[in-house]
Length: 402
Image 1 (cartoon, rainbow, N blue to C red):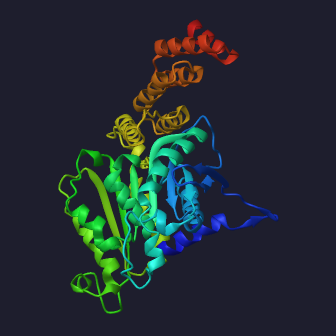
Image 2 (cartoon, rainbow, N blue to C red; image 1 turned 90 degrees about the horizontal axis):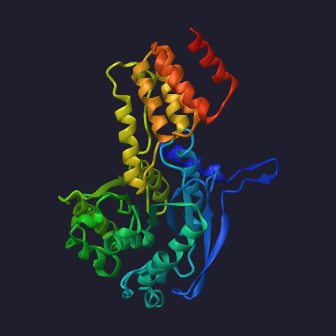
Image 3 (cartoon, rainbow, N blue to C red; image 1 turned 135 degrees about the vertical axis):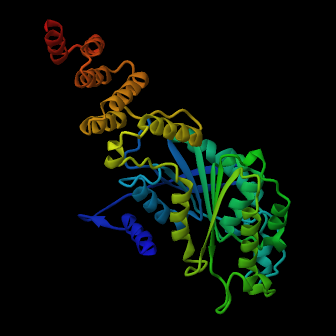
């Protein structure tokens, strides 16, 4: 069921309406002095993109292959369901994939790696320098970005993600490594991870590891660990990585892995990307149902304030609730006669938006419902001092005349 749903998301980006194409992004480019070449970029911004808002950024390797799927998911998951925030997506198409997505030069020790491909390997260090020193500053200068960044890669791209997490953990807030090529260069990076201490550099960092079923028929994840053939080298290295990360006792890095028994190396990215977004942004959705609001024991203000504290922590800046969100929530509390709790929410809006006449007006109406005439008059006066209106004048006249 989930797989069918995820696949359907792709069609968000592939249909036409009245003969006119739906655009999901634009092609940009940057001249890289580090790589000595012009690099094409595929950029998606939210449909209601505004320079007055800030957006997290997803940096996506193998841009040609993964852009449509990831953009479709984010568009769907950030709309009605609000599973994740609206985000900018930066797809990075390849020019020389082997060069850029391999951290070290290797010998041609696998059937698919001939002498020519091995000879151009090992440019991953320059590629990450390009991302850090040229691409990220370019995106931050030309788009309205949060400091929050996500890095997604599959196969050799997943290897690059893991290499960045090990050596440059500060570059991104969250990492998604999908069936990464941890076998690379006789498992060199994997062996380095065995001695890696996930210290304070990994606080508030997240990693999602997607593992495909690349085993021969008749094998399982237990049997394959004892296999020594080259055909299982790929999955054995990933399973070792998974075991190493699962045994971490420092608990600085937030880690989750999924093994997809029904998916192979080529089919796993779509479903793993979906699961990764759900896991990494598990903090993002605030669930407040009407039956919860009716409960006299709920501490709604604490829940809202703690939620925005978590958002502020994750995104690295203070984030306060919108006036309209708090107003709507307070109104729902008024409707179920939770007037004292509605008052506290309206007062939160006054604290956050002290120059807005409307927040004082609705707080005054709340005090009327509570039977507190003095407080109602006080807030109507404040609202009227900020923005005079016939409604406010009439309310004050009636209250002060009685």
